[in-house]
Length: 384
Image 1 (cartoon, rainbow, N blue to C red):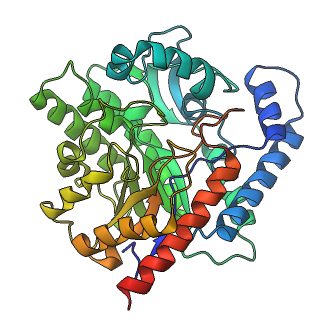
Image 2 (cartoon, helix red, strand yellow; image 1 turned 60 degrees about the vertical axis):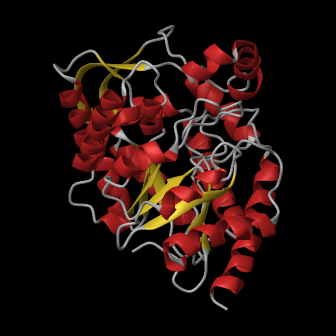
C-alpha cells in the first residue's frame, strides 16, 4: 500500500525545469546540430542528482528524476517505441474547446509562455508500422541516473514516470483503435516492468483520459466507451505488476488559462479507479478543481488505495500558504482516512524542456517547501 502511515507524506508529479546549459545541449541534439554525446550524458546525470537532492532538501518525501533527460513528450515516445513516424505540420489542437472560446488569449499564450521557449516544436506521432519497445538503453540510463542521485539519501520512496498507451500518437497502421492501443501497451510494458524491477514506483502519466471527457464532439456514452478502452489497454500494459507499485496521474496538462472546459472529476473518477494502481494523482489545488474534494463524499475509495490530490498548483506563481495546504490535506483525510492521503501537485512544472516554464524554478522550490510545512501542520492535527 502507498500511503501516509505515521505522517502526511509529500510528492509531486514529476517534471521539473532543466538547467539552461542542459537545455542548450538538448536543443543542439534535437536540431541535429553538433554536440558532445558524452558531455550531454554527464550533464543529464548531474542534473538528475541536483534536482533529486533539491527535492529532498525542499521537503519532498517521494522524489523523482525531474524528467531531466526527456526533451519533450513526443520525442520521448518516439525514442522508446518503434513503429511511429513524426508528422510535422499535422493538425494538433491543444485544449480545442478552450482555444475556440478564448482564441486571442491562447494565441498569445502558445507563442509566449507554453511553446515560445520550448527547445523543439510539438510534432505529433503517427503509428505507421508494428509497435515494439526499443528504449531499453534509454530506460536503463534513466534508472542508473536516478540510482546514482539517491546515494546517501533515504527518501520514503522514489518514482519514475512513464506514458500511458493513450498518449503516444495516432493510429494509421492497426485495423482498430483497440488493436493499436493494446500494441502500444504491450510495448510500454517493458518500460513499466523495468522501472518496478529497479525498485522504484511506476507513475503512469495520462492527461489524455481527461481529454476524452473534455471532447465536445463525443456523446456521454462515447466518452465512457473510449475512456474504458484507454484504461483496459493500460491495465494490459500493467499486467503482472503489483498495484501497490503503481501510481496513476491524470490532469489537464500545463494550461495556465481560463480552464472553463476542463472535465469534472465526478465524470472521470469511476473509470479512473479501474486503473490497476495503488494511488491516484489528480488536480485539486487550482481554482477550477479545488471544490472537487466533495466527490469523495459520495465515492468510496477502494481498500488499499491512496489519493495524491494536488495541494499546490502548477498554474500559478503564487506560493500557497502552508495553512491553506494543511486545510486541503485535512479535507481529504477526513473523507478517505489520513493514511490514504499523500500531498502532491496538480501537474508537472515542465513537461516540455523549455527556457520559459510557466512557474519559475525558484518558485517551484518555494511551493515544495510550503507543501512540506503544510504537511507538517496537517500531521500535527491528524496524529494529535
